[in-house]
Length: 272
Image (cartoon, rainbow, N blue to C red):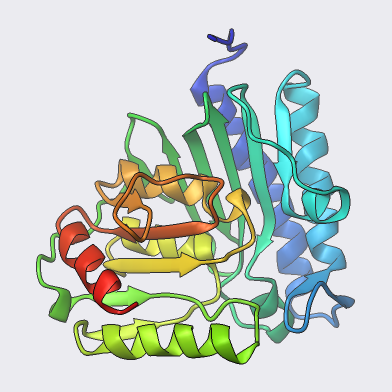
């Protein structure tokens, strides 16, 4: 089924950037203040800032695009799973890196993605603490603060920087599997980073700071919707950790620059 799209992708991007900057201002103001923190799980956190940012972003975009669908992390957490359809759908993580935010660690961002026909089409990731704005439109390149960015041209795993995350589960079986995999991969790469933001990890590969990233069991499509289009437009690759096609709803993601996918997938398989 083909959906009529009211508005241009450039307009979609402009409004997403505007909403991200407004939400970023809330995050910046709150960053050095005492936070009101709730627990979604043992170590998974949510703050009043997460909720305020999602409300602001949704109201801003719904005003412009009342016919579009909306999926947000905090709304989904409160109301249950929202199914992704072919219709234009805004997928929002109002504050990716909440644990970083609570601890005053500056890797936090607003992530706003738009899918059309389930394909990530517009991506905005904004880190208001470092004032870095990553943007992309499908087929039109990726940018950091308005300047074109490209993934690295590194072709050797051993010279590559790998990012991953520990996740929010703390049972022994999950942690053993996670640390065993990391231990295996550390023999094959230059070093490892856990920066605490899935969206910023994807953007890190897009601008050449990282070469490799994988995460299994993250929150949902809001973690990857924007970063996936930004990375792809920068010449990187997003895929399932098995090497199969990336599924935005699967809570599994791997990513690399344009040269390392096959070697990375092999290393991931050997680490299981």
